[in-house]
Image (cartoon, rainbow, N blue to C red; front, side):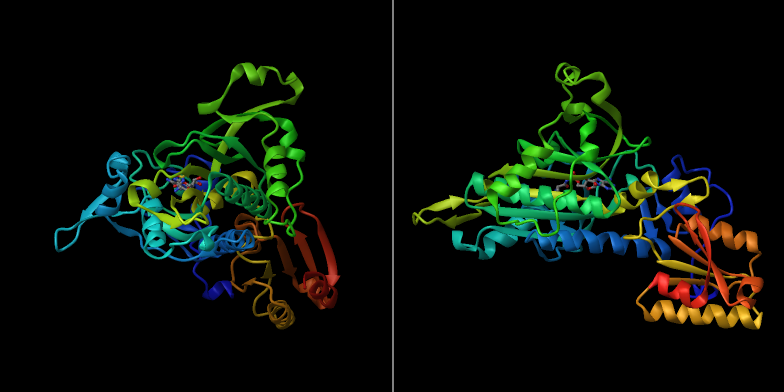
Length: 439
Ligand SMILES: Nc1ncnc2c1ncn2[C@@H]1O[C@H](COS(=O)(=O)NC(=O)[C@@H](N)CS)[C@@H](O)[C@H]1O
């Protein structure tokens, strides 16, 4: 992408309304724009990151056997009256009426809708286990939306829903998502700690929040510091192994971890002082087992092997992609701007032409731009006539992992300078060597 033809409205100054670094940087880099309170547009640079986050979420959901679909944002009130949850969300639920004056709502979550889809066509235990998910906008009329898209009113959620014949089977489905979440957050460059959690309006009695440690997090968390050394389940994990996944769950829940709602000071106190960690954290995912809470009132049942009808046991599993983007920034930035993990960077490299109009610089940059793109790399080519200082500041601000700097002197010698955004390390290479290194 040539910067001279892109749309990336960089702000020179720190916007005064931004209270935390991720909100500040997402505004300054032109990643998002607030349209109204708690409601945002994702501008091109932000959209690229959001799409990469969603791609990783999708890969790990699919690896765990979940099947993607897409449900609408608008829901009929009847479904929520069936489940008895129509009032549970209180003022957070945005209620609307259509032209026929039918009561509808902008969905805060989709347990009722997915149960309706299930009950309309699944009749036999032979169709189980089943896990259906989508990545879709939700609306919760938060009384105090803040911190940009970290706590917004309209937000994207990956929400998955599992259906099983028995509680034991449902716990295995829960463990599949538990493992998928550990892998997902690791691939996003985050260390998320699963913590026993309160279930709130979703319900049930078995639930874990996945919290990443960050000084600006809204959650207060307490845990054993050994979490930071636990191995992440491998890509070839056998998701059909009940014992295998249970042992991963047992390991990751074997040491103390709790949010303030579930914290037990006495238990925490038994941990040696040096091994205790209490910090602020950001909830990036939350999973629930809630048995027949929805299948019973909505009559979602299958014929079992015994020929009898059985209400299905369910769970739901949420991740917040539009919260993950700022969470990654909170965990990975410095005084010059964002430092994107390679897995979600909006571009793999930024080619900086220090002297547009100079024949050698233009030719070199065009060659790099074409070669890297032909190798499948996402490249931003700063071909603007901004001053050098501005070019470097922009490249550092938007946090692309590698800067390829083409200055007239280096180019005259057939060389370019590479700068690693995370470490600041610089090296001068021939153009050929630079292309080979980056592809
Ligand atoms: N206001 C919000 N802004 C941004 N992300 C949010 C917001 N509320 C929730 N999320 C994200 O959505 C995830 C799931 O939300 S939740 O309420 O915990 N769970 C559910 O809604 C269940 N139905 C899971 S499918 C949270 O872990 C968080 O990452």
